[in-house]
Image 1: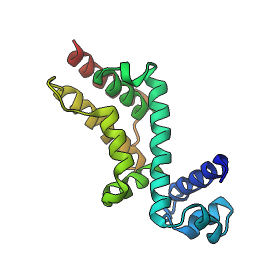
Image 2: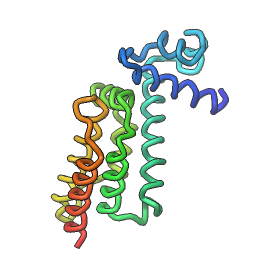
Image 3: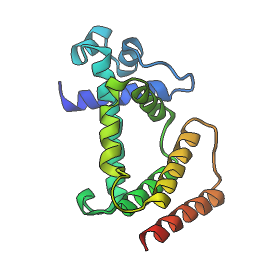
Image 4: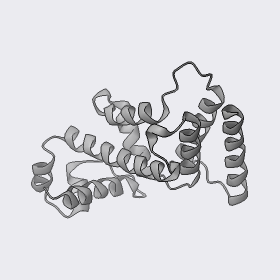
Length: 178
């Protein structure tokens, strides 16, 4: 399979759950959105779990690319505080979609699908170790709450309120890093 075909199929799958109707991720719905037959899609993803894992990995890869761009330095050279600040900026942009939320929800509902999501979380935000990172954890949880609230349509912040919230979150990080 050409990588662009795979990317096109996975983008189509995310679009399926981004629709207003919130269509389920099925072979039929993804094939239709990608302009393939169900058999053509099954050629690339023999089982629904294969397709779901690929979709989860696809979204995680995008998140990591976007987070890396915000971080601006190699992940290995960054501190937890820098990574949480990058996540605050990423989550604060309001660009996470309902489809991405649905994809991650699927991942946490089924253990066999969770590996890519958990690997990303552990790599970027392993909150273990000797340093007391309570403020960082609080900020990270708040940023997650922000993107979940916005992705699900529960909350939409206006510019001034968003800016004030993000500023306070970043100030907590600076206090932790000091």
